Amino acid sequence: MRTHAAWMMAAAFAAALSFAVAPSTASAADKKAERTWKAKCSSCHGIDGKGKTEMGTKMGIGDMTTAEFQKDLTDAKIKATIENGITREKNGKKQEMTSFKDDLSPEEISALVGWVKAFKK
Image 1 (cartoon, rainbow, N blue to C red):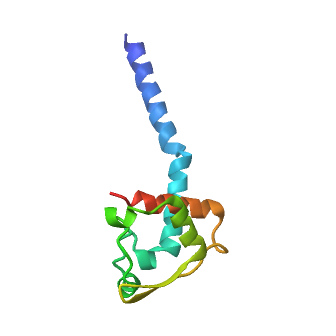
Image 2: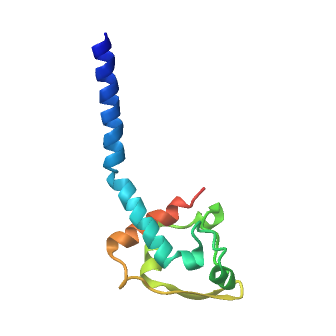
Image 3: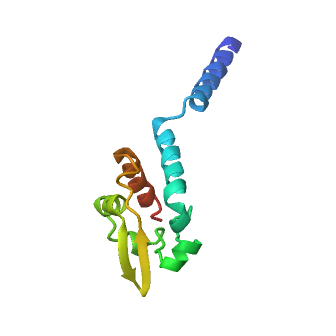
């Protein structure tokens, strides 16, 4: 009986250790998307996607965490905005976002699309 309990504990420990040592691909991709977001997007959109930064406030950037913002937001729209940027006036404020199609890989852009969609509450 003792041997069986010791084996069960050892197996449980080994399983837990394997999760701690070898992170899943999804979590590694999430970390990369987070780094890209912080480097390229957060100065205007904020770490949390709420747009409450100096530049975000100046340009009247929307809060990505609201249902209203996310309502008509498709993956294709997000991708096009990241790739092509934006120059428009909205609510009396000039909004400009640079194009990232030459700075980011297709994989990085796809990861950012997922990142923006994840702000949805």
